[in-house]
Length: 230
Image (cartoon, rainbow, N blue to C red):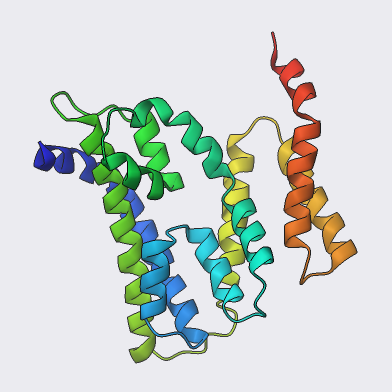
């Protein structure tokens, strides 16, 4: 049963493998450029397993210790997983102990596959989702660790490598802009970010901006729901 589920899950994760390996390698290089050994990208990718947050963590580890700021930042960056989790309640039911790992290992890519793909006939859904999550987790850990190790033997000017994180968020924003018909949420996000950048400065605007974005969405929720009604 397990082998059959693994064989069914593997083809769906191959495109993700390529992206995770390249992005993970860049993250490993970033950590190595900041003076961390390969153990750090290995551990963060294994235990945090939140790509965008791991890039943010690289900056948090070399900045002044501020646990409240780090907690709020992590909560805001990964807040979408709250909604992912709610939508997967029915699919994760009756998965036994696998549910614990499925919750921990849920990333955007695993959510997309597990939410939309129906396993082939004769394949247990719980094991299928488990192996999708496990394979994607493995790809990310392998890429990050490989990047950290390659940083020891491949030497080049890493000036500007921090822009990888910025590029990641820009690509995510453009992808959502292209897929969404209503661009108002994106414009609200940009507007709130620019406002907080002007008020709080470049070093302290992220948390206030995310809080303002969440507040704006909560205040405008009823209006959006009314417009969505036929």
